[in-house]
Image (cartoon, rainbow, N blue to C red; front, side, top):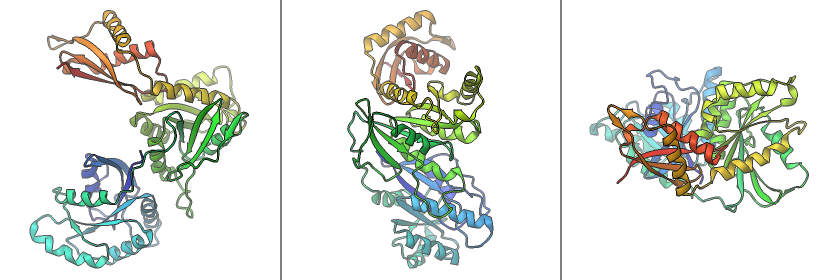
Length: 436
């Protein structure tokens, strides 16, 4: 199911980052009483009335020709273009400024639903001051206080009214959706072309969902797939071309609709911090993951090259220790035939169910091999376990006291489960619960 996207937009120093942090429940954006502190767009997930959505914090829109001001304005324009609903934030203490009116002109052109939030209305005596903001032309202004958290409920009630229908994907349940994510120029589109041009691959004209990225349905060995290519980005001038930041929201949307996520690494340039950040989105979403090292043809290989590169990946991506690694060249198509079998295996493991009786045999054997630890004079007693969900596989272990389940012992049980049932390519979740 697609999440709606909400962008917080306004001139600098109206409190956008303070509101952003309150809505997502943690201090992500930098908050400082200096205009221009937030220069880039920041993304996170928020929830209101059991509805989750992606939230974007933008740098303030300022009018001017300085390079930094131009870049901040472009960042905000990208956020507006990606958003389903826009929160236009103004400062209730300062009234309408010329900069507010310039931002309003930008938002008129967007043809997106706009909810007007008047921030820094910290006490009831200030509420009458919000009426002047009707003149901006966006309907009722909502008085809020980022500092005290006042009025946010009414604001969010209005925001979610404008969300588009949260339709489910129409593809068959047996169709495997997989997306390609990674920083620019790692070869995502080249790999898509390489996969679709293989022998015995039938490219279908069935209409796919093209809201967020380029979706291509195809069939390989009687299995139906849909490739979600996050490189399929609408371009508008150079705004979309300067840096990898512009692809993050597209990647997040593609990940949500995927069963398996291929996180691409450029073998020629090596691993950088952005690679880990992008891969982390797929891990946090609980998706099956395959690490794909592309442009392997550009490397002067020796007998140890692949093993050494794999060791680097495992060192940098410790949170993806379950993900298989595939080395290939999309340009020459070398080893690309090894990828789809891994996608199929990861997808099957992602939706795999384990019988409760067999699972408990494995758990009891693990307890015999490594007895549960004692903490503060109390011994953990593992009573039984059961699988409660798939995508990703999720297990509940019933114990005498969940507080006694140390993360290291939980990790030990996870490793035993993986040894017994595979689960390569997919994260698994384990929760300790007290037996009722």
